[in-house]
Image (cartoon, rainbow, N blue to C red; front, side):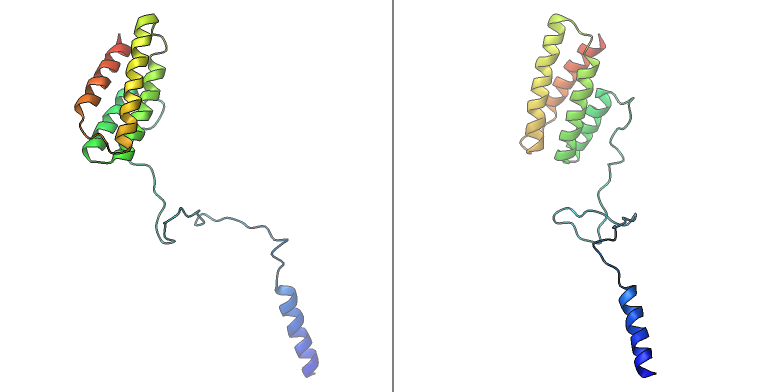
Length: 142
């Protein structure tokens, strides 16, 4: 009787174990990939609530957000918003002709240079950035 009970217990234990090679892993809503340096208990970073979203966002919206980020010394976010503003500006300027289009390309190149400098923390003064943004915005509004 003791042997029968032991055999039954072992068979239950043996058959209840699953083979991990044949079992597929299912991800739950709480599963997440960890970034280097991220603790298990921390929440993943979401988008900033002040960041503009949607198709209706114009270059001016992104540039305003970039200037606000620059004021708050969030350099990486400021650079990201500058880049989004540059992309929106390129879309807004597709209808420009000849010299106006070339002048816009020159301003965009200058803005891209400033974006790189903002990202590395080399530039914190908004004066030059504001002048270029105003110049570019005037070109696409005409």
